Amino acid sequence: MGTGLATPWRPLAAAVLAATAWLVLPAQAALFEDDEARRAILDLRGRVEQQRQAADASIQRQADELRRAGEENGLLRRSLLDLQNQIESLRAEIARMRGQNEQLSRDISEVQRNQKDVAVGVEERLRKFEPIKVTVDGREFTADPAESRDYDASMAIFRRGDFPAAQTAFTEFLRRYPQTGYRTSALFWVGNAQYANRDYRGAIANFRALLAQAPDHARAPETLLSIANCQIELKDAPGARRTLEDLMRAYPQSEAANAARERLARVR
Image (tube, rainbow, N blue to C red; front, side, top):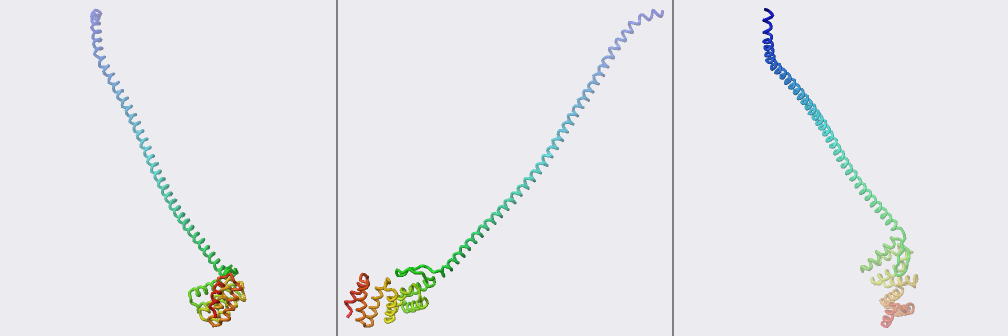
């Protein structure tokens, strides 16, 4: 009996079991799907975290690079500023040295000018004592600068028409320089000054001294004519005629000889 009852229940149990299995399978499938989703989410979260960390690391690296770049830029700016300061210092130094060079050049030029002035002054002072060559009335000779200066000063007085002063100046000149090459010319001019001052005898004496010393003097014909003029003023007509005749005989081609012929006709 027992065996007979068991047999009919087996199909039923199998069906129940089958139905139960179909009920259990969807629930397990759902459980499996939740796990996979969680794993996917966790995996996604892990990847996101990795990306975030990578992004943070990249940002940190960039920040570090920017910081280093900023520090390098600051250092470069300071270097450029130092370089600019050095350049300005060099420019100032160059300007100072250029100023010193210009001042030195001016000082050198001043020294050279002073040396030149000193040399010229020394040369001029030496020239005052060195004999110089002069030519007066066709006669060339050497004379001391002071001697030449005194003669020219005496001539300047004569040309002004101050005959008393000129007579004194030439007389003093002849006394001071008795051996001067200007002597014959000075005798001529002192004689003319004496003539102008009506010192006819003194003039004749100096004119004759000129002729005795230099009968070939360029002013010898004029000197004879001047002697004749003095003799005329002294009312010495015979002496004047003799002098005029001597003039025409000794210097017939001179202008003074022509004047002597005219004057001789008037001397009585």
